[in-house]
Image (cartoon, rainbow, N blue to C red; front, side, top):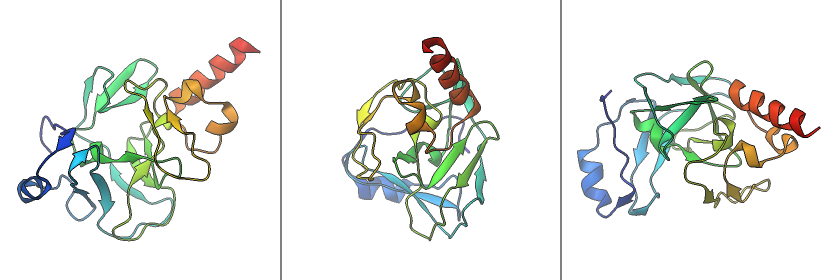
Length: 176
């Protein structure tokens, strides 16, 4: 894996980007590049069973909270430095990004070509760059700001990292 991995926010020539692309996890998943802002996605290159580990999360570097980082503790973030940075958010996720075990795990049965998505508030307390959700899921939370802004009832529908569960408990105990 590369030491640094830059996610391009706006792609103006998807064909040229695709031609230069070298997957970081060949045979497991790959990026599908699309023109425009934040339109690329990560898809499975093979089928995965619910509960199957898709890959370990390796080659990360510690860094500040950014829109590309993943929170790994109450005050710590990492850069993924791989194609995993293209995993989009969904309120009906297909995988969990488990920063406790540093693995990506299928939360549903996946077929080749399925999108790999995770519920961003499962690891993010307060997003660096909140955004409106377009996922279209029945249980869509509409505005992705982080777990801090969601009820325990909503969060209970999803996989949560230990630091997020701890922060939710601290928040809810402080207001009780």
